[in-house]
Length: 85
Image 1: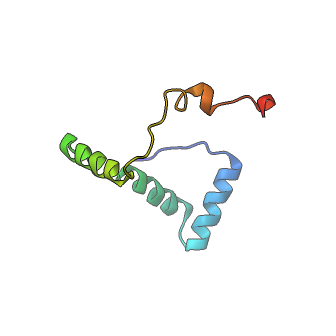
Image 2: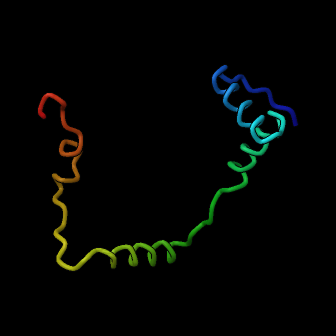
């Protein structure tokens, strides 16, 4: 299958340089890069596995660690205005 991509000049130049450094054509290099993205979806975890992993992560937190308040996790707390510094 043939696909035509319109790439910004700087991206094309960077990809060409990377392909040349590896000693392969730009076409081969782009196919490798796209293949790595498409073919590597990662493992799918079941809900039980996710639950187990979250329990393990929670066990890492030391006993007595204080809980964060709702305000500490709020947008207003995280994103402040620069003129308030």
